[in-house]
Image (tube, rainbow over all chains, first blue to last red; front, side, top):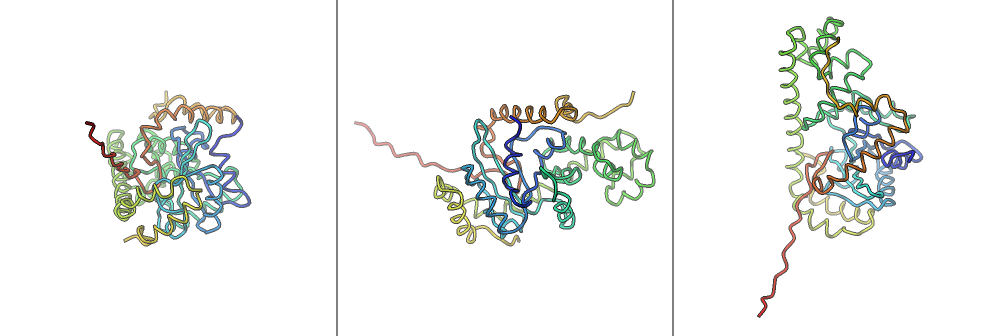
Length: 263
Length: 67
């Protein structure tokens, strides 16, 4: 086979115009860093036509909704994510979508859309991927470590490296740059303190990032409490329906049970 | 010899030097093999703001007593 289901479906999402940028696990493959995720996720354009096109595409593949927000700008613009699943031959394909990726500012997001405008396939750059990987899962931090080594600019290497040895080397090469970056990454203040100290600080930094993401998810989880309770009945109601029909039902219900404005 | 911290496996490192066709083939094979964990991660989420699928409680049918 010359292609891959995630590349194929990304082509379909982007038929006619750029609507979806591959991120996380499958972007790590495209950067040739690692294969470690069987699910796909995309950053979407935050507009109604994009949502319609993605739903149409997924419906053609026989996809169904998993628990999540409706694929609708009203929820996506608040940071919610939408989740689907379908089968392709022997593969269970899961597709996850959002328009407001965590830890990425709006200006960075705008720049990303411009940067990916002519790319095929479009996938997030190394620094965006590293930010997306700052999750609450330990395994993502080893990927960040490898991504940092691929970053062409020393500033980014210093901001994202997960290796004490790499940081010591970088510190010797770019001492003035290190001073400039301390406000963005406090552990750089100790870059001359030796491997053990830097490793301890890297561990603490990782744990702080993990806790931050846990807190972020807990916020959404709390806001989705009523939706979660309602879901089993809804899942039964939409089971077997064509995706767009199921979507209409979900939107109607989500208006009552899933906040579009987060507390 | 330059000391280095290792993050990934040899297989992952090898991705860097593969031809594109080889990457696709390895990626597809990996996805196929990864299906073995589908039952175990049936309710889990890899991305987004949800951690897991709500458990659907299925009411056990009432059994009529046999006499």
